[in-house]
Image 1 (tube, helix red, strand yellow):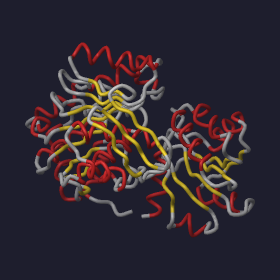
Image 2 (tube, one colour):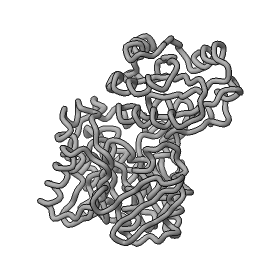
Image 3 (cartoon, helix red, strand yellow):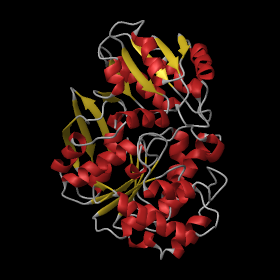
Amino acid sequence: MTTTGSDVILERMMELHPKVMDLTLDRVWRLLDALGNPQNALPPVIHVAGTNGKGSTQAMIRAGLEGMGKRVHAYTSPHLARFHERIRLAGDLITEEALTAALDECYSANGDAAITYFEITTCAALLAFARAPADYTLLEVGLGGRLDATNVIDTPALTVITPVSLDHQQFLGTTLQEIAGEKAGIIKPGVPCVVGPQDDAGLDVIETRANRLGAPLLVYGQQWHVTDEHGRLVYQDETGLLDLPMPALPGAHQVQNAGMALAALRHIGADEAACSAAMENVFWPARMQRLRSGPVIDQAPEAEIWLDGGHNPAAGEALARHIATLPNRPTWLICGMLNTKDVPGYMKPLARQADGLIALPIPGETATLSAQETARFAQKAGLTSACAETLEQAVEQVVSNVQSPRILICGSLYLAGHVLRSHG
C-alpha cells in the first residue's frame, strides 16, 4: 500500500503517548482550546454510545438523514482498510488533502504534549467537521462514553445508547452497572436519549442519570417497540406505526439496531420515506458481510464466504442466531482474536452452529492471540479446531477437506480489516 502524507503524520501521532488507552478528557480539552474549540461550531450532533450495534445504528441513522436530503458528517472507529473511513464530510469520505491538513494542524497545535492517538485524531475529525457545511454530525464513541474523546459536546441534539454488555472491563469496570455508568456519561442535561434493549441492571443506571439531568428517555419497550413480522420490520412509537422493509444489513440483531435508528430519526422529524431509506440504503462493512470478489473468493470459488468483526459474547450470540437462519451447509469458522477479549464467551454460542474452526493470528497486531491459543479456546468450547499461520492457509485447510463449505471469517475488526485491505 502506498504511503501517504496522512500516514506519515498518523505514525508520528502514535509516538505522542506511551499508552494505547488512558481515559481522561484533560488532554482533549487542552488541544481543542488550542484549535479554537471547533467542537462548538459543529452542525447538530447525534452522539452514539453502547457496547454492540453502535456502528450499524449510526449507519442506519445516516442513511435515513441522507434519505431526507440532509448532508451528514459521521465519525466512527476503528477503521478497517484506511483511516479515511473514520471521517465522512457531508456524506463523502474525507479526502487525503483534507485529512492531511487537519492532522497536521492538530499535530502542530499539540506540540510535544502527551496525547493518545485516538484523542488527537478525534480532535482532527472535529476540526474538519467544523469547517465543512452539513446539516448533522454523527459521533460514535470510541470506548465507554464518560471519558471518551468524543464526549465534548455540551448540548447535542440527541444521544443514543445501544445495548450495553460486558466488554473492555479493564478500562470500564467489571460489572454491568459500572459499564452502563460509563456509557451513560454521554447523557446531557435536557437532551433526549434513545435507549436500546438493556438488562435491568444497566437500564437502572441509565435511568438514574437521565432523571438527575432532566434528560427525556426514549426507551425500547416503553416509548418505542420494534419487531420482525412476516419478513417486514414493524416499528411503533407514540407517533404511530411503520411497516418497513427489513434492514439491508443481515442478522436478526439488526432489528433492534434498526429500532434505535428509527427512534432517533422519528424524534428529529423523519417521515416514512426517510425511515424506509434508513433500512434499504444502509451499508456497514464487516457486519455479516458476504464477500463476492477478491483473493479469498478466487481461492475458494465453491465456498460461501462471510466476514464479521464482532468480538464479544453478545456478538457471538448474534452471529450464532444468524447462522441458524441460513440454509443448511457445512460451516467453518476462520477465527483470529485479541488477547483482551472474552474468547470463551464469544465462542460458546458459535460452537452450537459451526462444524469446526481454523485459528490464526491477526497479522500486524501485537495483542493477537496465537493460533494455538485460539485453537485451545475453541476446543474447550466444543469446536473441532486446527491452526494456520495465514488466512490463505486457513482457507486451504477448509476447502481441501470440506465440499462447498460456508466459511465465516470472524473474531476481530482487525482481522476483518486485513481481509478488506486485501480485497481493495
